[in-house]
Structure formats: structure tokens, C-alpha cells
Length: 457
Image 1 (cartoon, rainbow, N blue to C red):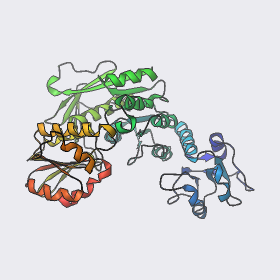
Image 2: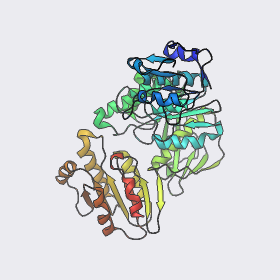
Image 3: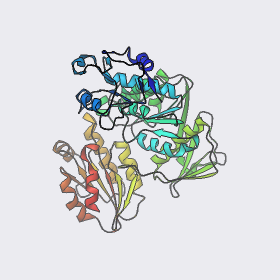
Image 4: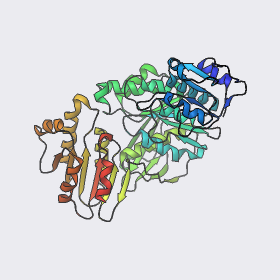
């Protein structure tokens, strides 16, 4: 897809000619990366946390770029003869161009957010929805104000469906992502405790997640968990359109007539066989745990909205996602790699999966960040949960302040050991584990616990 001068003028205002000829300028794509830019691209000099695109103007000129978008305060860096657009905020310009492209593509856009499970749900969607056609999904963790725009800009005319993940660090951020992506289907996986230290309460988390509907297609649909009263309350304040509610029950609760009701889909999960029964169809999924059955059900709801049909029996093997839902078999142990991030809800869900694995069960837990004043309370709750279930040992990696707070709680010292350095983990673990045991490794991104996996191997 090409952008013409007139296309970009509509989004950003008129081009500065700067004594140059621009009549024949067309752009194949919009780029913010000077490292792999194409001469036919338009370069937008956005300023990130660790870089400023304006510092690479000369580099992109050498690579053949014919025009750029810059901050209006940076006019002095533009060489004579280079056409440019001057804007108040290059990032907003990048997003405006993304919205223009999204409209020109004219394909369904699915947006997924939630406290936990959004990345897994996005990856499941990329596999399950292939019957609809060619799918573009957000790569890696491109779920912020830059990443979502990058995903849209990376689409081409061959794509039939776009799936984007939407994260947030505060109120108003998901609304902005919704503004320049204009989704047709929105999924809110859950309202958990992630970011409670930033937003202050689950009410604010629910409010922030519901922002995904601010620019949702009025004829679109929102997919949410059934029986979440807090989410329902905030959703009603800003969304008057259709809502599909999903719920996962144990297979033992399945009835003869288990067809989904209007505006509601129920799945029945067979934990032993890792299958989920929905609308008289059976789906065997490679990801374990009730929480992943629920993530799959959200995608099934998307498929139903898109009009996709399934066989009576369906089998899906999902790609391993680094740091999420990944089982690593070594010569001696089975390792659950959940190192990407952690929240109270996701830790409990992963522990339940750990308990289904063979041998004794051990947990390496990096403390959960972004919990603010609730940190001690949630960590005590998790440790109490660990103490009550069949986890044979837990090593908690945390800072000294949290350790001191937890020492005054009723944490059992024989089952749970607290350390302050990743170097202290292996000596303790070696005292506990034996061949055939299973180990769950989970923690906030801050701890980078994936670095310990090769050492255990």
C-alpha cells in the first residue's frame, strides 16, 4: 500500500517544500527505524525512552529517504532540499498515519487487553483464526503506543485480519490505542491486580481496561468473562453495544444440552485430557490449565463472531511463547518457564498447572512488581496459598525491604526460603530437587529469571 503526498497532507498538514520537487513522491510504508529503512519509506523521527529519531536524519538521508516527519522545534537539522512535515508530536503523527492505513486496509481489527492472559490469547488467535485468511498479529510485546502503531504499519494488502494486543501503564493509554486502531472486536480477558500499584485500585484497573471500547466499531462486540460484576459496572458506563460473556466450567458440570446461549458462551474443560467442549465441539489444546482453557474460549468467541466453523473434533498445537506456557524437558527435570512476568492471579494459575506435573513440585518465584502498597499483602496471600497446596518448596527472590516485611508474617520458613540475589537460588534448589521433579520458574520481568534456566539444565 502506498501513501501519496495528498494522503499524508490529510493526516499531518501540508508538506514543507524546502525548494524541492515533491510532485512524484509516493511512500511504500512509514518507518521509525533507521537501521532497516527502505528508500521508498517515509521516516518519522519519534523520540523514545532511549533514543531520538532526529539524531538519525543524516543516516536515513544517506540510505535514500526522500522525506521525513519531524518535531516543529527541530527545523534546524533539516538539510536544504529535503521535503519534510513539521508536527507538534512525531509520535502522534505516526499514530495518525497508522489510523489512516487502518481505514484504508478495511479489514476486521481485533484488540485484546486484560490484566493477565492477553499475550497468550493473542497467540492462540493467530493459530485458531487461520480459517479466516491471512492474519497479522502483534509481534513480541508490541502492545504500547508505539508497538500497536508499528503493527498496523506492518500490515499489507494481503492481510485479511489484524489482531493487536493492548497493554497499559495508566488511565487514558488504552483509549489512545483504541483511537488510532478503531477495533471491531474487543476482548478483555480479566480484571486482576497487575498495575494496582500504579492505578491504585481494581476499580481503576477495570476503568482503564474498558477504555478499549471508546473507539470500538458501534456495530462491534466486546468479549468479557461472565460474572465479573466490577467489569460489567464500568463497561455499562461507556459501551451500549453488544457484549459476549464467556465462562469455563469443569467437564463434570457439562449437561446433555450444552449449546451456548445468546450473548453467552460456556466451555467445559476436561483437565485430564486437556480438552474443552464448546457447542458440542471438542477442542484439544496444547496449553495446560484452566486459565489457558479460558484464553482459548475467548478466541472461540472471536471465531464465532467472524463466522468461522469448526469440526466436531479439533486439535491445536500452539507455538511456545518465550517465558510463557513453556515446558522444558531436561535429562533430569521438567521446567515450567513462566519467567516473562507475574501477577497474583497468574502465579496461582501456574501453581495449579505445576501440581499436575510429575515428581515433587518446586517453585522459584521472583517477587511481583507494580503492586505498590499492596505488595506485602499479595505476597503473603501467595505464600499462604503455596503453604496450603502440595508445593514441596519455594524460593522467593525479593528485595530486602519486602523480605523484612514478610519476616513478620506467618510464612513457614521450612517450606519457603527468601533470597535477595539470583546467585543464591541454585545452591538452595540443589538441596531440594531430585531426578524426576518439576520446577516452576515465574517472576516479574525485572528479575530476568530466564537466565537461571540454562544453569538448571
